[in-house]
Image (cartoon, rainbow, N blue to C red):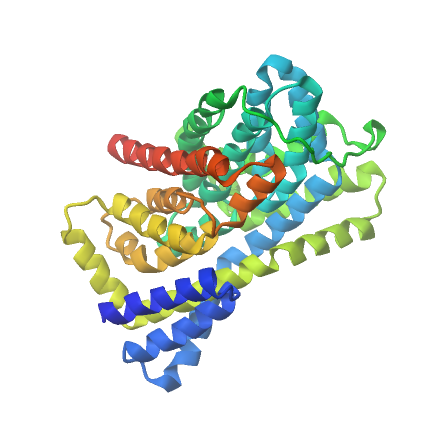
Length: 435
């Protein structure tokens, strides 16, 4: 049984990393082959794949689509630009690396990684040129924050899909993720970036495409709208600690613990604050939301494909037997989950694929009660960010935008991502010890 699964994972890695197949097609094909090899009757396999895709996307899809809509409007409206320029103005020239760290956090919460990269890195390069600073020194904190929000925090794809799989709580996962993310971002961002303070900048800079000042929404409207989902989810998660005597109030707050409800409210709020209030017709806002849905479609397909493979592993009994076997190893379950995600990340390159594939292998550990499911989500998130190299699109985007050699890309980008993954695991283990 183990040889069949390992062979199937090897085929999956080769199809995605070497043959450049779309992950959704690769996942479906490998799921069929693995299911047949694990003894599942061929007639049952189509139904199992449908069940796996449906159960995985059931609660994740609405959050992903709403998050994509929300992030698209934050970008198109100029709210992201307003937040970035406001923070840069507040911090000043000598503290720009801290300004971009905070910008990465605030913008990284509603925007998916690639969108945040393409939107903000040209601004980094332009500002670095204007103030005669090293672009790498200024950019590393921004990208560390974007990576951390992408790997650790809902509504980003992998954590959003893992939370229901593990029976975790969105508010608690978000809270734990923020507790870990802040020190990790500081150490892997501004602190790590100090060694590149005098690093050479690109000779040919990408120029930021910006809106005119009069076209931008207000600073507080931009910041408040972008942080609205985090504020509501965090308040709902904390409320039982502060309002334990007010049962009626807690009952009224209970719907706001659901990420779908909160993201729907965020989308409606943004439609007014960043849409109608800025002079856009509602039809135009809905068109922007439609573009956001298109942006996320490929990621949703990857999540569906990973769900199909997960279901095959569960129905065959392999996942449960693996979970029992892993418990016998002298390694903490959270470290094992991180290692599995790390190995797949190194092999495949995609953080989302690594997180979702690892989840299918270690999910039974959450059901056995041997580990906090919220921390399991974060451990896999940390592993999924490890060791980005030549099979990761982010590696090549960083190299191209900052005009670096392969050697310099490894010692800046790859080292930063690895630092995020290692520090993230240490943060998870520390929380596990303290809780």
